Length: 170
Image 1 (cartoon, rainbow, N blue to C red):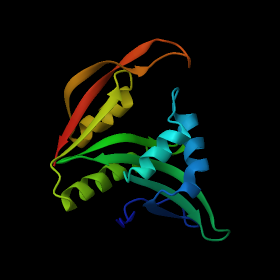
Image 2 (cartoon, rainbow, N blue to C red):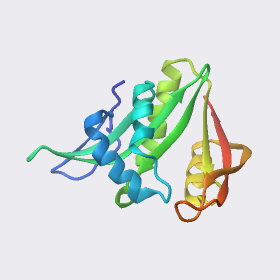
Image 3 (cartoon, rainbow, N blue to C red):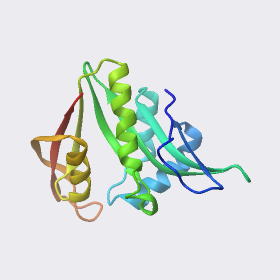
Image 4 (cartoon, helix red, strand yellow):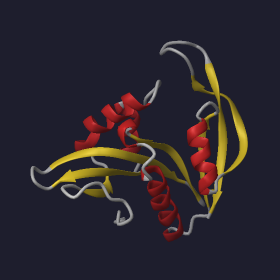
């Protein structure tokens, strides 16, 4: 899949690239994941997703002068019978609230249309008001709750947090 980032601009010296994630991206992926979440995915989680053939794409800032790329955001989605299950969508904290998450949702929606899928499903922490607002504004509906779904508090704690289950009809 090759989607354009025409609607997203960065600066005059850099450009943006959306592409499938590879093993070579994992150091950047783990770094962004670890600064974005209290309980980040592990390298093994991402490796398992890659090996399972899940849709894994990232948005990169590319500086053509020195060929340096910086990972801005990414998503991981598992294809089911008639849906995608969005497992992870992350935008690095410095790049949040600039339309990158919405653009990645657009890409996932377009992929769903191309594959004749009918739904996108996801879980989100009940306390993540910003993400819930983004998904709701995009057109997702709250369809349920998963009790004690996410780890909560300090790593190693037995505390758990509920997840809000949301769906988007294509």
